[in-house]
Amino acid sequence: MLRAHRSGVLLTAEGPRPCPTAIDPIGGALIAPLSDPETELESATLFIPEESNDALQVLVLPALSAPAGDTDSDRYRAAHGAPDPIRLFRLRIDGARLGSRVVDGPDIELKDPFATESASLRRAMNADRPALGKAVSYLGLSLGLRHGENPIVIAVDPEGVDLRGPLGVARFPFERCASSADELRRFASVLLPFDPEQTQV
Image (cartoon, rainbow, N blue to C red; front, side, top):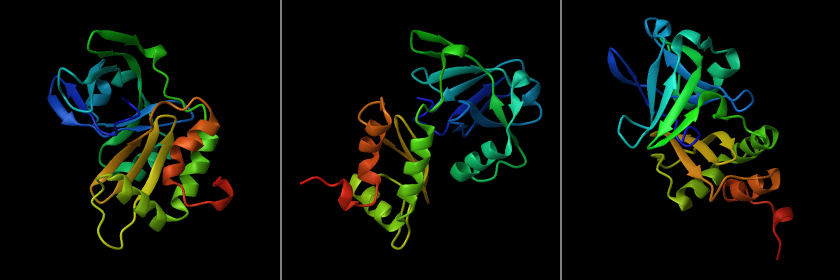
């Protein structure tokens, strides 16, 4: 669920607020904005994708979180734009709960084991954005594209592809989590430009 959604709600004693997120596929960190008062909190709850009983509830430790680096900031801006005046942090996760299931923080793994292939696929998809736009239209992804506008792929991971358009970020989920780089490419092939060398008759 953390990979599948780029939005959430951060709940503190001051109440809930929208909290967009991004993921560092190399280090596996969850990236999100925090206000100055929030950085002093011992704990807070991040609901994914919205505040409800059925949501994923992630216990984060703002006071132990680390400021985001330049690469983190670039990744966040690609999805959501500039977070100013709120600063970005690599959130320290203490644990999570989904329904009756509870997971400890160290067991939450967000690293992409195929990060090199994922980055290559992202570049390949964005190399022909009009073709990407046709694929998005065929798949019925809701990005709010008007005539002449094309989407952009902002992230690829073992479970799907994140694309951005005028309405924000949409997710193209794979049929299951890719277990190899070859499987990742096969799942993502519907969004890749046509390659006759990869087509078998």
